[in-house]
Length: 360
Image (cartoon, rainbow, N blue to C red):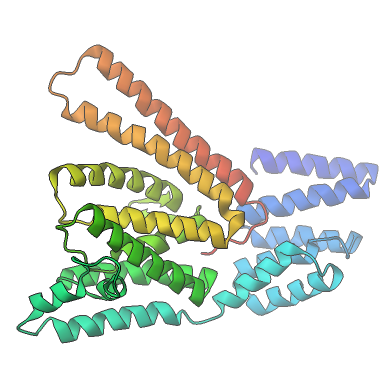
């Protein structure tokens, strides 16, 4: 038994001895929340059932039970509990939000599948053609960034590897996001991120050859990060890292890489398009789902600390003559950056895991 659980049990025993029902209900709610956060849904349910015996009409009680049902993928039971909650408290915002999320997740992610199919079909018809390079040039918006090619360029890929990588990533992140926010918001974020990302890439680096779905994919990555910031990505099948930290670090690296792109005209990888698509995804997600603003602030903190971290590491690695003073100076920056990243993550975790439905 962990220390936090022991403290709660002592408080519960005290409330039972004093026959303080209000205190008992409060402690049992904290116990249920503790078990919910630690994925022990059976004990969480037991705690809530005990509360139902004392105060069956307590606000959020059926909502909490619905969260447990949803976590166990018992969607029908979750919807029944939400109906009970909304019957008692029709204006319960959290219950309405969970009901909407469960409805969205029950739908088939048709847009993601259609986008992948369209990309594959277009490449299949274009690639064997003897004039493939001419088609590629026409489909890209190299000469006119305000034409319909802002859309068509997102469905054109320069090689089989280019297509394969983009479609695999689109499948992984697209399925998760579409089932989280719904098909129409998903399509809006995807196409907007793709169009704006490709346009900015072509404007800032006029000689660039901009095609591919990458900008739109980065937009949906950003949207998923804001919707599910604690979702863990398996890095090289070795380490599970929260998505908000992964994209905080990667975004900072991409900004540094794009700065280099602008100076040396190295446009083989469209870092500017990726960054613009990512920022578009963040902006649209915050506008569509304003309750995610706290996640946005946490991402800003993590990205800023990551910027300092990466620059300090690169300086230490690339420096031909490293003085002791520089070593300690950059070492302190690295340590502070890591602490800020950890602080931002754990602060976010402390306010987002308490009785909140998390997509698995």
